[in-house]
Image 1 (cartoon, helix red, strand yellow):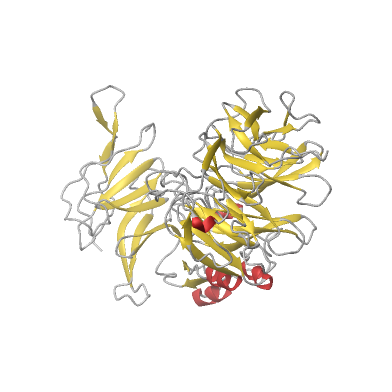
Image 2 (cartoon, rainbow, N blue to C red):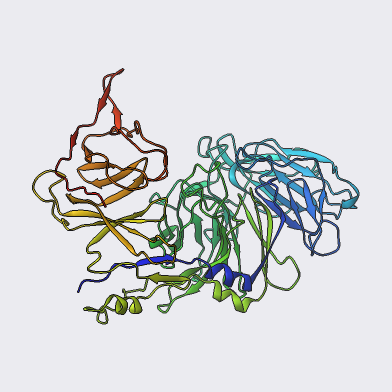
Length: 602
């Protein structure tokens, strides 16, 4: 007996429920004011406070949003804020921490001076200290020892840093470290700071090259060296530099595409030579734990579980380009990746779920917000400001994604054969949170090769009896057919089975909508028009050759979308058309009537 046809229904509730045991998530503001936030003591009580957009929040309860400057919410679906990054630091040396803000990429940096009693004023004095801070992952870090931390970023197509003078309220001095033309401005992606060569001085790392800090950093361009010898993407976000594998040299963790997919770590195995290890791609099958999300536009380094090994936090940026990026409409998830070693003593980063309704903006901050000795997370994005307080380090392991990919593959000697459908169902292994329902088995269905649900919840399935070799003759000379399974009474059992069409030749895909059924089977695509209510074919299927089509087809004379039962009964239909090479003319794709196709009334 061939394996039964099983339908798997995902119940994706396990990780969020377990995350509730490990983290307490609190949304402090739902309005979009900024894509970054700052952590530091603003009121002098020794406890961390937060700054987000024009507001600051006194810790540890963060109960009230207090203004330090003017500003109204931005519309997440329509644009961007003028506040991308924030930092809290005593910049003027008066003993009170101030707020430093980087605006839109390529725009100014603004310093807001703490008045002493921060709650007493909603209009702190502001001083522009840098005219351009380009790159979408600039830093505020003590790059050059002594004095204030530096603003590290780009300006006018060069990488470099701004250095404060004796009076930090006056414009800071720009020091380029690269040649003109080496930095993408204002919207470059990927930037990090760290000691990459182990000489005790911090270097600047961009998506493919790194700039070695010399003994005299203010004299001329820094030496440029390549670390990514093979392309891996268009550049991500903060490039993390740390000895992740604890072998004595610095490694790199970075996202591959700030507005796409990809995450990896680069192992430094010899001085200046790095080996790429992919951690996550565009498909869940590219991660051994089945995790895939896009737009990792913020990363932060932290020992989340307190085991002495540095982990990192990242997530999905929400509506970065108003929902137009790959994976843009996925949930705004937040994960931390645990740095551990596997059974073979090889480094492994295990994803742990935190939240699916905050994500990241262009930065994510990590700090102990409530003084309990555990690392917490600050998420600032177009979804507002959310803090994630760690409850108990012992529960963190429960939030790890379950491994589906087993090294060496799963054992093959205990696979069942000759099982009944119920027996095969009982032996299936599925991840936690998933269940499998048996809705059809032989002889009701054989050789299922493609399926799709319609607007009424019916399941349309192609039986691929022609596979793998196309039968001689036309597209209507094969042995494939389309079945419809329906749960008419809504009890979860698909009790009705209908044969919709037969004699299809090597079909491999099916789509339902716009008044009919689309069937893919290279080199032809077919369309079967249907009646509403009855799901009866109203015309012979028509076929269009896919060979030589270079433009995206447009639908013509089609009812409204929603499946065969949506809209009014279709009386006529025409095939998709494409633009002719001759301007002003339209040329229909070759089509032929599929006479004798075997399409029948259910």
